Image 1 (cartoon, rainbow, N blue to C red):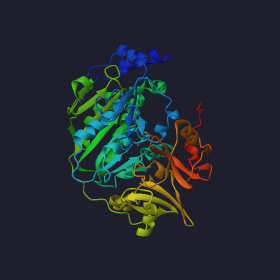
Image 2 (cartoon, rainbow, N blue to C red):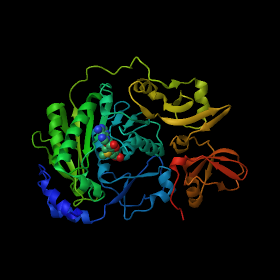
Image 3 (spheres, rainbow, N blue to C red):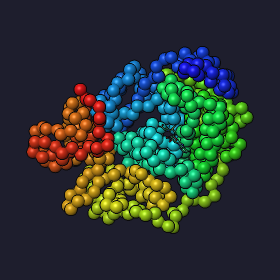
Image 4 (cartoon, rainbow, N blue to C red):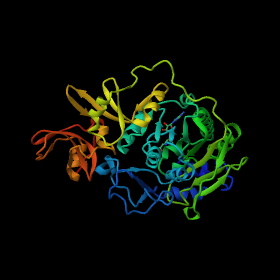
Length: 461
Ligand code: SAM
């Protein structure tokens, strides 16, 4: 069976959607023939000229931009500096839901439970303020590493990465103001980008995903505070993974469904679940510029019984706060209010407002990125970490060496840069003002400290 035949067979098996009716195979097939739309989201903390004048994504006009063709992002140094993130347009709707439903009376604590590779985490991070805290979690370890890499590029100290199973969050009773669950799903909404999702689709797989989705939300929900907001999202067309889950959440977890404002001109399909009339928002590629996506928002009504307490038994290698002097040593690098924390000889910068969060969270979670990695001390020298070079808080006092595009690409390939440079020592190599990584300068060449496993492997000519 070829892919088109498979699609023709699958679409009639998708359950009809209340408010939207059954999907018709021809419409889905026609959308499948067209290329997927390409879009990026700009980093508001690293403004640049890149894509600024492109068509805006209507539900995220400040930072969402459509591209009319796919450039080779690997060959754009601004991509490596974190000036933008390549993200599918429909999923940027999380920003619209955040802006309308999340009210900020005090610093926010946000959990992105299924976060890798980090599209929605970087979006949430951009909408948060410096004293808010985002825990971006990913259960699969190698994917957690990619998530940490993308959040490092994004450059914020208030975004941490954990590598935990959803049930590990249950102990954090009532801790978070907002939880986003972008659940693993059958991925039917991504059919035109991912042929594998067509091959893997089956009624049994929908059922398996739906059971797992319920389990994931139920496991994490105790960590949401009373009155806190839950965003539930998938990239599936199946009602079993979307509206039916909303009904299940209203029945079993005392959640109140919330509407998200949408303009008619966006062509988003608003749906209601069969039993509770819960609000849902579907993105169909044949109606708008974006891939298949679903989002629903809820408020938690039940009270949490007990505030989370620090676990008595300490994990091995806990982070220790350092004296004011130790912090002062790293202060030359960052223009931000933070404390230096040390673990096994590595230093991390944690915003002063988040040190109590670290004390609690490190007893319960496997934290893979804590604030901003600062570096190590070797004798009298501070050896700066790569994360510092990408930080949005990098101090203006840190020496920088601006590179042109070709030099920047050589730097990103971890090649030697030969250039007359009057100053010696550590400098941040920059491209259009934003850090790419560290170099240590000798009179006429530079030792390139760009991380080996991040380097560009493709031909740059
Ligand atoms: N939110 C991400 C973004 O915007 O870039 C995409 C997340 S993807 C739809 C779902 C994620 O859930 C994957 O990274 C996957 O590894 C993770 N996942 C898979 N099984 C899981 C489980 N049982 N519990 C929690 N997360 C799981």
